[in-house]
Image (cartoon, rainbow, N blue to C red):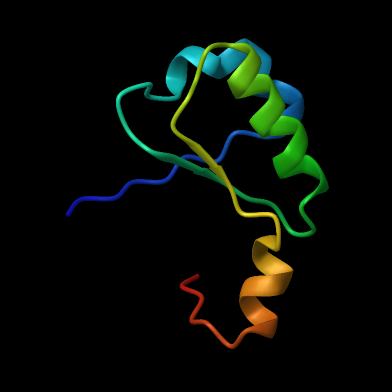
Length: 70
């Protein structure tokens, strides 16, 4: 399985929504979950249906002890 990542700041997302593929599952995350919730709304409002908002986000990922690649 090939996964790719693209960093689009939430304040730029509305102008770059065409850069987000509609034919793939999209995972949205941030440090706390606030910006990812805003980004998810932008994508849903733009017609995206295959969105996963990682509500616990990076803070929750780290607290769960999962690996982070830098």
